[in-house]
Image 1 (tube, rainbow, N blue to C red):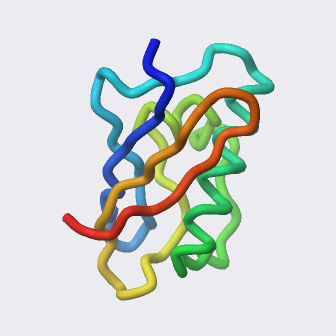
Image 2 (cartoon, rainbow, N blue to C red):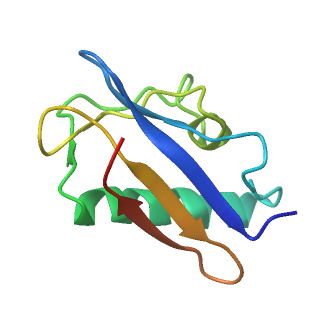
Amino acid sequence: MPDRYVAAIVEVPGRGIRLDPPDVSAVPEQLDEIHLLVLAVAFALGRAGYDHHPEPRDPAMQTLEGVLNGEAVLPWRAPSGAAHGTIVCDLGGMPRCRVVPGA
């Protein structure tokens, strides 16, 4: 399995963003590792200037696995009003994520 999670950041108009990982992107299988990766993704989005929507997330539709595999829409807004870029996370131990600007 690759040691990196990579996903394009895709805008979902009026709802937020979703992650669009390629098939070769690593997604942890252990629940604790999934939690840590989603938390690291959230921290990276915040550091990149993304804001969380005021409406709460729907836990029935926005599962942690759904976030990582691109099925769930995240209630985040891009800093420029248009989401673009890629989230890159180095795995192994504590994941470290960053947003790489660009299309």
